[in-house]
Image (cartoon, rainbow, N blue to C red; front, side, top):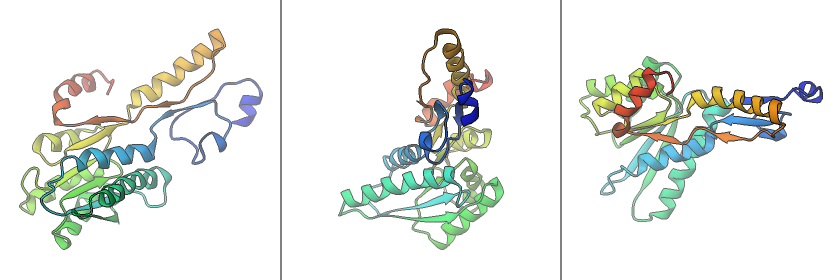
Length: 224
């Protein structure tokens, strides 16, 4: 990357940045999600739906332990939940982190096994979209819609379907369309006008059930 920049070739990084950001490589800009912040926002958005008349216990699904994207997202969620617990001494907020995997059926099974062993659990946050696989086994366990709150990341058909059924309540769209479009736009502007590159955080779009009807229009167009 440094050799390319030294030769006058502009480099824009998309989707996944170096773990050290601009200090870790010579890229001119990053277009993608601030993973830690996105995890924080998912936890904050889901926590707004918590029933404060009883303790909150959350299982955090670390889809790929040791991989920076998953660790950062779950790290952000942990930070918010710790802040929430500290700010509410009369209301207990706890969480556990599990290796949830990154396969719909495996993740669903692990989450439901955890909930069976920890019946106080009333919320789930996943590092990706695989947590949505828990919807089916939650129904098998007799859990009703909205009994267990679930939130995570990305827009895929099963996640939208489970949202309609009342088993997924929040997701963050990292807006991959922008991650593909904006680097090309920046490279064009750099080439044509000599403008500088700029970082873009594409991943703060919180999606709930009320957003789905309009969202589906744009999914059909390949934009979302």
